[in-house]
Amino acid sequence: MKSQPIVGAAVFNAVMDAAGYRCQCGGRCGNPHSRDGGRCPREHDHYTSKHGRRVRLMAAPVDPLATDLTAARLPASELRAWCPDCHTAAARLARKRLPAAPKDQCGLFDL
Image (tube, rainbow, N blue to C red):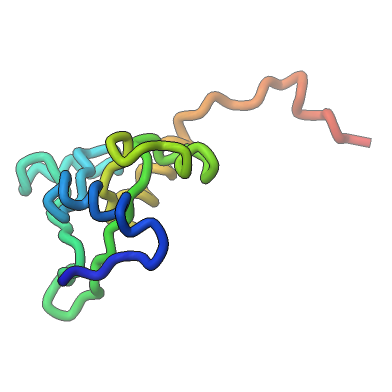
């Protein structure tokens, strides 16, 4: 039996069953995963390497910058399986791609 969260197990299991308990990142993290057919090779409850750490996938929105409230409202069909490394890297890349703040707002709180 694979590990699962205590709360939201039904949604988690639905997402993981659809993903085959494998990370569904197809390159949004910046890694094209070309050696693995364009999809991250990490699998739930497996290890990253012989001496590596155990991988615990998470069910999260496709948009890694979605707020917790938005994510909680999404049905299982709109969630994807992410390994923590891909989700963190995808969020970092998405933040970099956000437009810069307009210059007229930069001094809003200057005294």
